[in-house]
Amino acid sequence: MGSSLSMLWGTNDNVIDPATNLSGKQKKLVLSTWNILKKDPTSTGVAIMTAYFKKYPEYQKFFVSFKDIPLEELPGNHKFQAHCLNVITALGIAIDAINNPPLLEASLTNLGERHRKRGQTREHFDHLKVVVLEVLSASLGSKYTLEVRDAWSRTLDTTFECICKELS
Image (cartoon, rainbow, N blue to C red; front, top):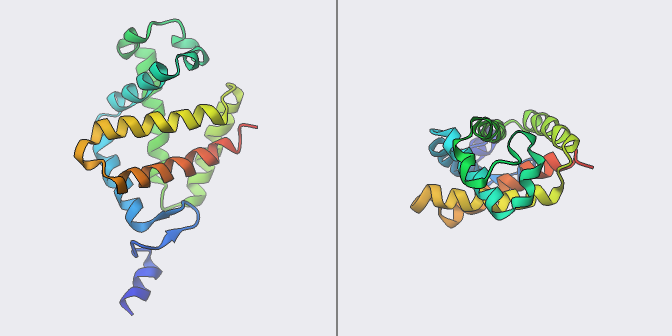
């Protein structure tokens, strides 16, 4: 009976949520590590976007507000910082809605529509996923286990899949 109640209330760590492709345990891992990362959202966003432009410099041209600013100057640029905070806010919305798939989908659909207007593609998001996982590894240190990596990878896959449905 205990396991039936666990499944009913969604507390069974091994049950995969078909909407997110995450188990209860994976959701907990994402939420707990997110709590670490969101303590300094601007720095987290700057780390992600700086690494993104370092690895894919051609993507900086999509950002009119800071497309001509040298990479090494970006972290101190307030327009860049504001965009980085927006990135982390959007990621936070997705993570906060991890247990509410309809809200998650609605939020990400809107984000996808905005990115379509800017000319972003699936490849841009695939590259962003690689960078986010690298920054998470560096930021979380020993807390970035294989289980955490897998949980975040699945979270980003679900998030970007929903966004990318709107890109074409």
